[in-house]
Image 1: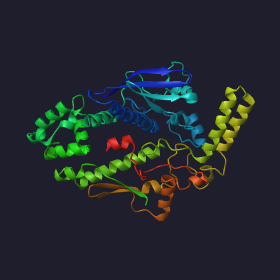
Image 2 (image 1 turned 90 degrees about the horizontal axis):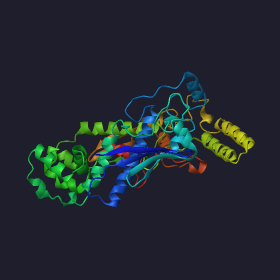
Image 3 (image 1 turned 120 degrees about the vertical axis):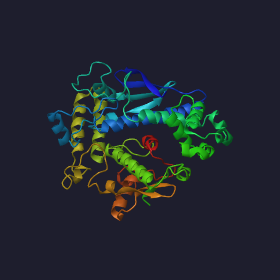
Image 4 (image 1 turned 90 degrees about the vertical axis):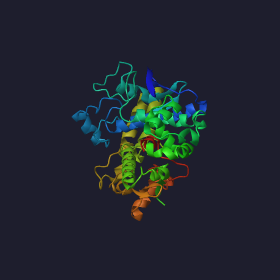
Length: 218
Length: 185
């Protein structure tokens, strides 16, 4: 469930990562696009947030610090001494996401692409000694809560799907234990993590009203 | 007024179910503030759709020259490209352009990231308050001077003088916090 990095692409004018999203059955085109847009925004946000604090967006912790020589130069130029991939800011400003049929593509296009490849080394030709990868490759796992957040985005759309919208108060009225509640929610939100399904219920006005009598079991 | 009311949906039902209380509101408020301030510190607006903050004036001026250099390079005009790069370097350090203009008083002010921090007073003044049905986030107990600085950034009240809007809180109609903040909450 969720998403994974399927492939990467690099050329003189583009560097990108293709992310496939595991769309549950029964979602409309519009719902899938909402998932794409919010997941794309989350992934870009996560990358920028982690890079800004000199950390890899993927499992692996902090990046190596700048060399003393470059750090002094960077500070002298008024850019701070952190390994945050920001000098003019142009490269990070160019990081965007686009919708694709399978999910989203994270990309940097144009004149910033070679610079980005220098850091990510998708081409295998980077001349930078300490690369600091910030775009995901196949097999990379994002760190932090971004997976949970993307699952939550998917759960929200499932909550609005035609199958879940048929749930009524009487369907829920017989539930008296947490186990029964969890089992019921898992059935209704197939393909969605339980925690995210519960969040989706709490954030949806209609569902929250329907489940009002069992909120204490959440 | 320089504040925004952020309501955590579902609070009424959760209050009845005794899930929400003052402790919960404090935890929520602390979390929201941390996310907002971390976002600003790395040069990213906490408001949906606003992206990274525009460069300070000295760098914006330098970017124009870098663009010229890039075009000249593509056209094979190495001489013009060299001149334009020199102009970019000069612009980035021009004394009358921000933040170079404040370096005498604030020598530690950096050009990147664009973190809206000079003395730190404005960022420090962003706080929260619990209320029935949610929490309120903004400049709740700030001086007029700080509010004016905040509005200048958040509402772009100085855009006519070349200071772009750099949204800090979702105060305009229909605005929301970005997906990371909304989802984390």
